[in-house]
Length: 549
Image 1 (cartoon, one colour):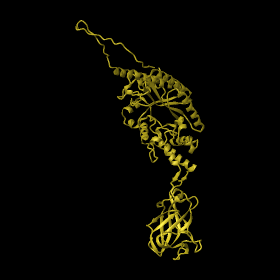
Image 2 (cartoon, one colour; image 1 turned 90 degrees about the horizontal axis):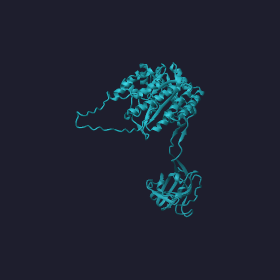
Image 3 (cartoon, helix red, strand yellow; image 1 turned 90 degrees about the vertical axis):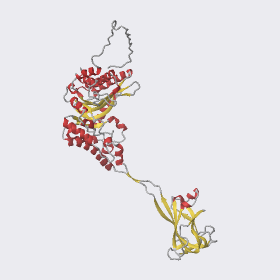
Image 4 (cartoon, rainbow, N blue to C red; image 1 turned 120 degrees about the vertical axis):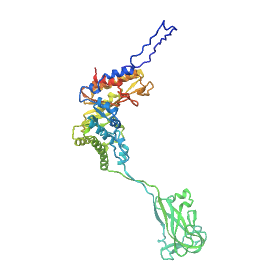
């Protein structure tokens, strides 16, 4: 592996004398520019598939479906150097679902059709996972049905005098019993039965000494007071309501008509009650026509209690309902994938990102049971009508923890197999980092070697997916491929070689396939080709890794 160190070079300056005939200096000029020499060197290599001895080995690359369908540079490179394509992380339930809960499989359908017609295999997307799923949408489907609380009001009769004896004396708002002519009487209209009457009251009202609300309610819950009033005679100037010591005049009520029963309504918000009064369950009430020499009757005193606050009605879905809903959603995804992939895909990720399960916020098994992955696998086998290979896939960054992560993946595989899932191989979505800082890269290289050697611990075919290398400068910032000089690019190429060679050696007979993230340099990934379609040193690194000579 090359490591880039600062080099200081001494430069000698040659001074020319004035007599050109006496001294001539010759400055050597390269026969060819370096890029031309590099192109000639790299053009000596054959296409990548020629360096793979096993005809069943999948040498692949990640492609953008729209770009691939254009049959341009990417398409040409793929068909001369690779035998498989993939669309890593491009077709996920979380990104394909719309607001209505439907999946847009058009992109997957397009790439599957093109691959099928061109004879290039397509590595299929994930069928089951707790990652990259529309968990919020799924939770919403099985959330309880909540019927919002609707405020309502009830009329409660608090005084109607029917059980009182005729002639029973009552007080007024200003005078006590016996000192004022207020008493129970028969309704002069013969309609209301027993009523409370008063005679010749001036700026005074008949009083009900004690009105009691239903248990648990206070005056704070009362929004209106209603009653009936029958005016015999007198000079009324308004109607009036008084609660305890607070009252107000209400001119919106009819206080002029005599000889018939009138409906009075009083708004409690117009009475300035104290906090102590608002907390009362029992209180005194005075009401009626108000003025000079008033003779009237009152009856049917009611309060309106407004139930403004209350709990929403929560209707939980049953376990059976949840299973049906969630099962339908999983079926929608799996059936949609199978429908568009058809007979063009024979390799699928049966379970994706198992090491991320602990942080998942949604678990299919909670509703479908622990055997749901096996059920999906059986459904796929019944539907496709051809042999299918199933992989467990995990995204990893090559480093010191990679061997331990591989061990954890195999534990997850064992757990799946215990539940009846057939796992044919392991798919590792890998990325590596080349560090321009010397000591960091030495440590990084050792970790890569150890990680690739640990592939020998996997007891079944191993596929590397979407492999990419990013370059970090001394401060840890990513470096654009376009800014790499020749020496740096050669160093990155050697990292490619080390990873590919390490995979081939580590996996051994289980080396199933290797797929790269990019065809052409772009963004932050260093790729085997540059934008004009020419190979670069990364290509050479891949060749050496595959060839292992």
